Length: 365
Ligand SMILES: NC(=O)c1ccc[n+]([C@@H]2O[C@H](COP(=O)([O-])OP(=O)(O)OC[C@H]3O[C@@H](n4cnc5c(N)ncnc54)[C@H](OP(=O)(O)O)[C@@H]3O)[C@@H](O)[C@H]2O)c1
Image (cartoon, rainbow, N blue to C red; front, side, top):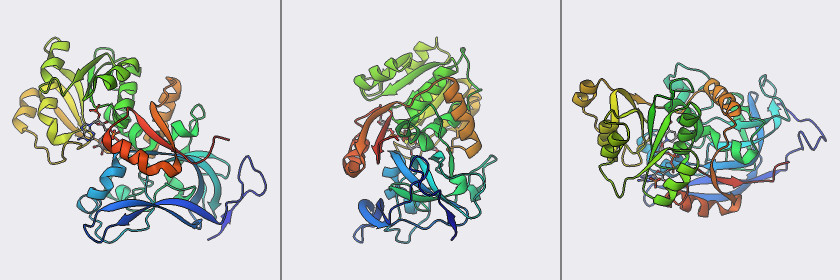
């Protein structure tokens, strides 16, 4: 197990305590669904190629809700994962490193990676085998152990709470919007919803000069996204056939890029909104992952439908540099105390927020 701790330097690496709080999964014997419980356990030991992170903030995301349904269906995990630490998105401070760690040093401020082994493209199946909070222990705890490749330096200009929002949502938005070099002032982008991925997508598209149309269930949320820079808002509750409005706003041409977040519920409107030779980025399945896509419609318009799978560690570094250059700050709706996790998760499920919800474990140093 050998691990290195820098002794006595409070600003860089205090010795960890003996125990840590964790939010763990608990599988119901009745219906097989997962819920969460707050536990106190010994601080985990650091493996040779692992780091021990003192977590300052974590962000919650849709995947933390979906884990209950998708653990078996998507990841094929049918054994009981009770006790597994939840969550993927954290920012903190490295307090110990394993004997064979080379790329991370004690005292570094870092952000976690949802897929710790997705280091660089091209993506392959082995890179997705380890997913924080899903197939392996995640980050919802004061002290967590992560493989060395599962952390990257925190952007200096962001605080821990801001940085904690990046791992799942920002990198997905980055990939979906073409990684910083596919959009320009002639492009129109449709972003569905006002959650974590959507908020970053809006910011990334705007930073590249594109025009952004956002759809939402709520006027208030639309106003908040327009205040954050979105050019147009469409309330899909009031205008269920919202593609007509997208066509109006684009002079009949349609959008160059449509980020589809809701799968079955939205794919038809997405296809009707996209321009000839445009792209539909398939990001999420909030309205069902079993969408069917008309090949006739794809062929007829020469449209590219592109599945989006988070992003690599290298992509993450490039995204952070882009964010720094454009001084993009994550849109955080609310910060909760760690012990208020259940309330935060209820708010996430109810959709009463825009952008990100964050849990604070300790004050910024
Ligand atoms: N492909 C990837 O790598 C990847 C990575 C991260 C997330 N995702 C997926 O992307 C989607 C969005 O994730 P997120 O983290 O941005 O979600 P989120 O922060 O929870 O945002 C959800 C928002 O979507 C809208 N919405 C519309 N229909 C909804 C429904 N049936 N249930 C819940 N919300 C609904 C709501 O906004 P309005 O009220 O404004 O409509 C809601 O606030 C999810 O399906 C998630 O699994 C994919």
